[in-house]
Image (tube, rainbow, N blue to C red):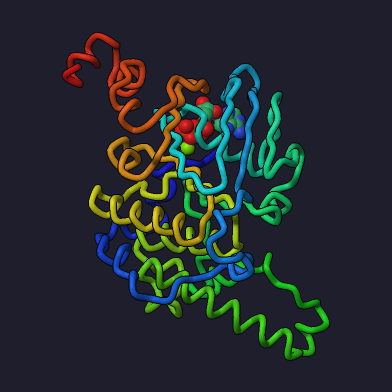
Length: 309
Ligand SMILES: Nc1ncnc2c1ncn2[C@@H]1O[C@H](COP(=O)(O)OP(=O)(O)O)[C@@H](O)[C@H]1O
Ligand SMILES: [Mg+2]
């Protein structure tokens, strides 16, 4: 499977450096999801994004890519999944979204078993993702890419679309407004009319997140969203991701290769190595865990000395 940062880098024009855009939209109108408007003020965040993985494993021929992986994410949590290349992180996303079926184990989303559902059904249930190798409609406009992400929310029928009924017009207007607001969060509103494939690499990554959000997920899966970005750009993006979590009150599971970056925003982190969870805890706990340090830096003794522990 061609799923590497190198593949992604080939489609863009190199990293851009615009961290300011990530955090500058504090005065704009917040973007509300359809479900949010109906939520009574003062009520706690919904638990819609609740996910439970129970001992899931997957085998490709002789390789056990993920082994007995368990994880629970509550409705508004921001959890990090880290680990060296080939650890099994993307494979977990693929199992979660119906691309692969686990060889064993169970997946529950909002209390319902997810097993065996096709990717489009998983998306309808409220799980959206981005890909390690960016997947956009490169020849369509930036705005259209986000609008496509919103198709799940469309309630008019085919006949309405053909006849361009008032319901169709109203819904399309709403989707466009919402899509533009999402682009605004990422500083992309001025690029709405541009062809997606012509955007700088970092903007393509941001656009993919906008498209995922347009489907109004309650759980967002981000696969190395900062890959190929420099540290300052990556930190800017992380600030935006945290804001999205707070503003939209959704759960986020974030795969990130760069430890420093993931430590800045995640409340809880799981570390995967050779398909197994080797540590779980707060950023502080993970940072000091000799097993984690060893997985990242080499042999335990050397690693502990290098980390100054
Ligand atoms: N479809 C597949 N067929 C065979 N092996 C696969 C497949 N998908 C992933 N793998 C293997 O599973 C392991 C984990 O891969 P992956 O989940 O992409 O790692 P990560 O995202 O942590 O870098 C790797 O050894 C990879 O080669
Ligand atoms: Mg991966």
